[in-house]
Amino acid sequence: MCHFEVSKESIETVHLIKFDEYFKTEIAELKLFEDEGLVENTPEWISVTPKGKLLVRAVAMTFDRYLRADQRARRYSKIV
Image 1: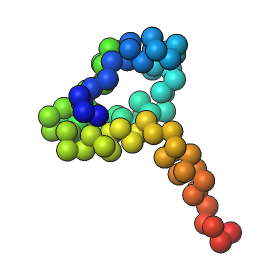
Image 2: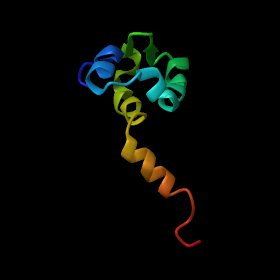
Image 3: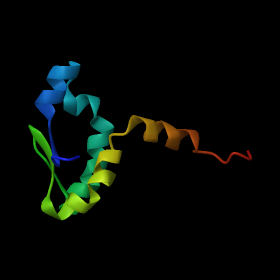
């Protein structure tokens, strides 16, 4: 978040994954930010544009696995 960009290759190297495959769902969600000009997604990098810097936390939350799990858990009312 501090650098406003991430190298897909560096993540692939450290975690032995294919970035675009592993984060397929998250990349689809980033499309909303791309459409607004807040994020650029290239084959090598995901970068937050100057326009999107104030919303960098929202962009990063797209990749938060614990937040995603929490959203699934709250899918239904606690009463039901």
